[in-house]
Length: 107
Image (cartoon, rainbow, N blue to C red; front, side):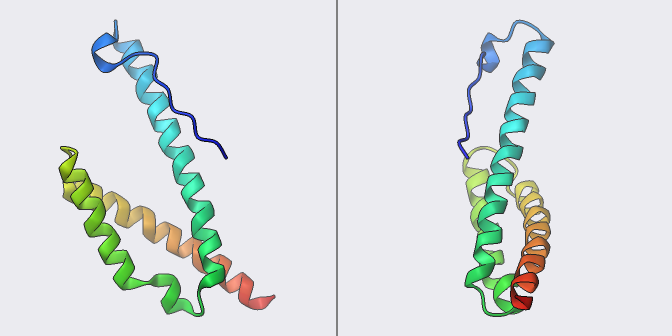
C-alpha cells in the first residue's frame, strides 16, 4: 500500500472555508488510510505472539502511550488528548489482534 499525501493549499493559502474544509478532509482521509495500514501490522504481529498476555502487552501499551503523548506535546498538541485518542485506538486494535491470534491458534 502506497500512502500519498499532498495538499493543494497551505493553511495560509486557502482562499475560503471550502478550501480549508477540502484540505482537512484530505488530511483526515490520509490519517484513516494510515490507520488501516497500521492495522495490517497489528494483524501481522499476532503471528509472533505466544499467548493473550503477549497480545495485550501492557508494558508496551503504556510506554507507547507515553511516547505518543510526548510526540504530541513536542508538536504543540495537548498530549493528554492524544494519549487518550491512542489508548482508545490501540484498545480497538488489541481486540482485533486477539481475534486474529485466536483464529491462528485454531489452525
